Length: 181
Image 1 (cartoon, one colour):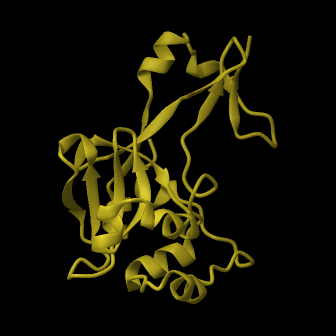
Image 2 (cartoon, rainbow, N blue to C red):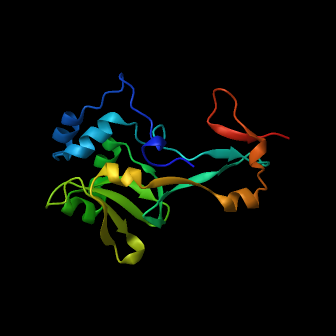
């Protein structure tokens, strides 16, 4: 299975992110390592996504998902676009008061945060709402975090929907897998 930087898609040369304007608009300083990362890689669904397969009833289910290998209990659901992350930052007291940017979501009740001040610049922090909103530094920068990401098979969906992996195919312009009859 893929892992680390191989999971990401480079941002196209035409897709320039104006970080300075975002910093002015939201009155925040993006830490230097994350600045390079977000300018270099496509975030949100087009940058990192789990494969989906169309099953018999026409619905889509996930074929795989992301875990953070140093702690496989952390199921990573994907990155937030930087502008979106900044726009929702004020929705949570913990985020706003501590200068945390919610750069990603977890499969459980939590978030992946980027530290921006108080000596936590560029640190990646897990916010676990199920554990009294505990905050834990899980990586010293975004590249260390991404290197720990691994794509793993969603065996429950494969068993439940009786998906034969050898029969999967995609049409040229689609992102969804289909099952050959």
